[in-house]
Amino acid sequence: MFLELRQYTTHPGQRSNWVKYMEEVIIPFQVLKGMVIVGSFTGEQDENLYVWIRRFESESERERLYEAVYQSDEWLNNIGPKIPDMLDREKMVITRIEPTAASVIH
Image (cartoon, rainbow, N blue to C red; front, side):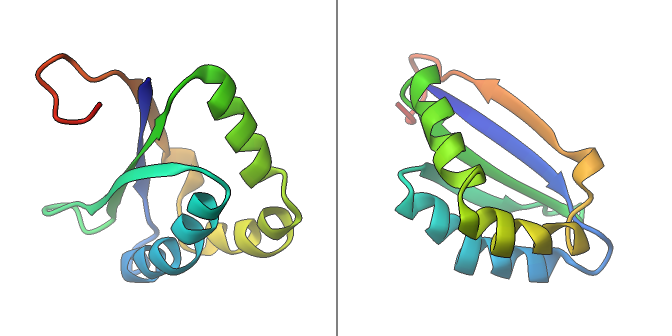
């Protein structure tokens, strides 16, 4: 099992729009496809920071879910095209992490 820590920078003034889009569109869609979303966060001191975490049981599960989400007609035609207006995709930082024995996330 591993987690994917995804740190995004929204365009100035777009974070509230991005959070709404994530919570109303992206997260429900990905959960419907089988993704496990552990958490969704905004930066306390950085007004353009958005962070979320997804959990995968294996690399093969991650690959299968990536394909189900990112190659779907819904993502390609409806969801994905709206992202560049809100998010600076060049500043994405995606880190794979594994919980230690003391972590409450397993």
